[in-house]
Image 1 (cartoon, helix red, strand yellow):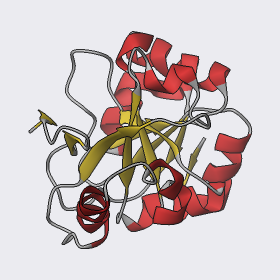
Image 2: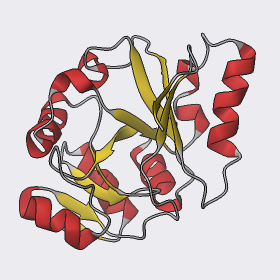
Image 3: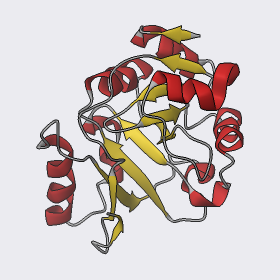
Image 4: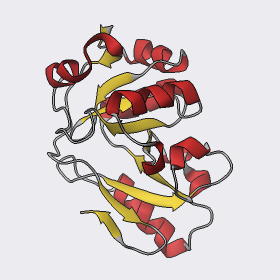
Length: 189
């Protein structure tokens, strides 16, 4: 199914399906992070090992605020600032945050932290809000290949194996940078 309806796409996620959708810079694959079967389907499609973990994408700070509670206040404010004070052309930032008991083990992979981004991309924000929470977000490509940058490219990779929410990419031309909130180390520049 290809749709432009955020409500239909959110229903797909709630039904345990995998969804391809445009993000800030590349197309992503998403699912309900609490649905292990849907998550394993993403790993199969991407040929990605479970040990690596994936990013969680939220439409609003309130959806992931519980993951910020154990951070020092200055770091917490820095994280929030990168999510809320970003221009549309600026590259998005994903933060590695201490995972709590609400994060399934399969999402973290072999890590104690979880990768989280609050998006400013209007379509992604609407999708997360319609889903009523954060979703999995990993680039739409099999391992080792370039991330899809259009519906056509995503469809070339995955054809009818998943559903698609059609829309425009954000203005960034790169996947999000990834920073460890506890150490400040840049994991993906």
